[in-house]
Length: 111
Image 1: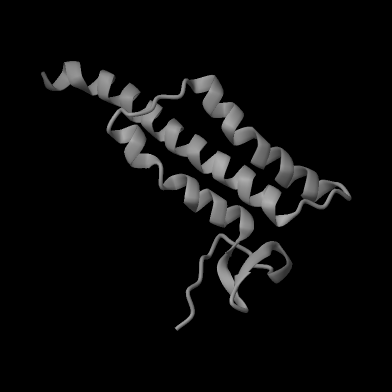
Image 2 (image 1 turned 135 degrees about the horizontal axis):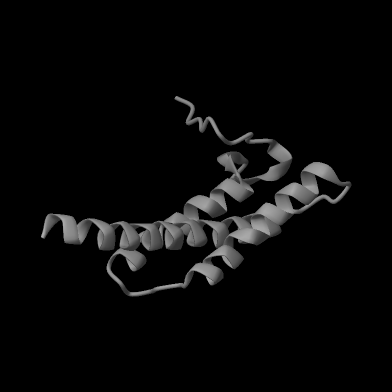
């Protein structure tokens, strides 16, 4: 059985290998999913990152990806993983910000 992720290109030169086996995700997507693991920290209120810091966490992976796609710049896997992890944390922070905002809108309606 082969694990496949539709949105990831899984190019060997952009993926990590462990014991000769390629990860099922590229380095950037591996970082994104690693960053997603912090969601419980946001859900339980142990960490809050304001909106602008959240944007700054997401920006490096966008910049790295766009530079690589549209210039001769070639990123390496550690940079892809780090920027992906930062973006994953940023996306989870953005999710918690959006959830808090929606909760404030819905709370007066329900109660």
